[in-house]
Length: 262
Image (cartoon, rainbow, N blue to C red; front, side, top):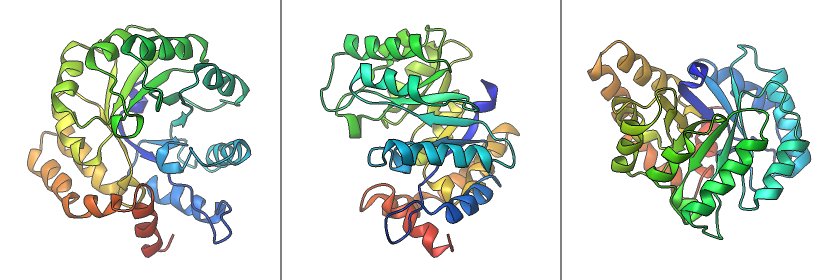
């Protein structure tokens, strides 16, 4: 799964004034982001997966596959708090060309750690493609602990975690004790460099929709040992990151993209 290292862009879903998917703008966005990202993440939270219907999701995945000029890897989001429904959605989705699933930890019903473990184990047992865990306590109201993550990391079909807890101590525990090939991925743009330096492999990013080359600079700086370059690129996001979320994601980054002509 080395191809899922570096920057994954959590693609937004452009829409027109009627609330319909704007495929012209989506095509422009795919070309733009391909200048600096390493893979596409389709139907993450930033893509408004919670409010698009099944047909819209299917059309977007098909469109990304057909307009992936650089043949970048594709991660597709299928998750939820109903284990059976998640597995049924996986079974009914054409995953041709999809390299991995991104599946969020169960939200709202706040299961125990054992419940979270059994949820992901059931999904991974049934999924025809590898699974990346997604821990985002700010949205799910429960935390996927380092201990549970490490327990799940031993499943042959679970290859990594998008860690958006903001808890660097928790991330360090995962980095220290995880299997060598288990992917620790930052789920927070501002923690991209810290996650890299503790042994992580990159980020699944919101701001990479607009600023893909900034994340490319962070990655290359780490890779060639030029810390000042990586720091400069990371620090350049400080002033813009906060306003991105004042009205919730993806409002901020969509507005930024509109200013850029998308």
